[in-house]
Image 1 (cartoon, rainbow, N blue to C red):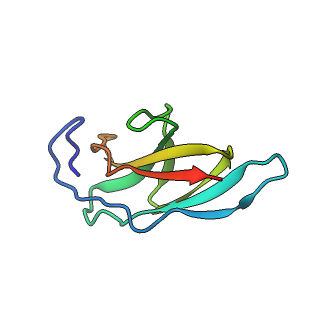
Image 2: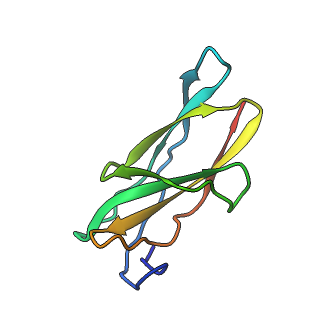
Length: 107
């Protein structure tokens, strides 16, 4: 992926096999863990995770997770499909394009 939303810094980012149910809460909600491959570029300061219930449409603001390559999504409702994408950002705040999108149906 590149920082094409702001500038053309070349980066490559892909999700690793990453969605796994981690359990449920008393309110019927579920958590799932998202992991991805780190971008091998010294300019990457961190990552943002985007979540939505429609493909290609994500809630804003995104969740900034710093320089970690995993995120535990909590409060997910059963019988709902969630869509996830990740971006990388550099030390100047420039953000890459979205990674490939993945989805997870919470049963």
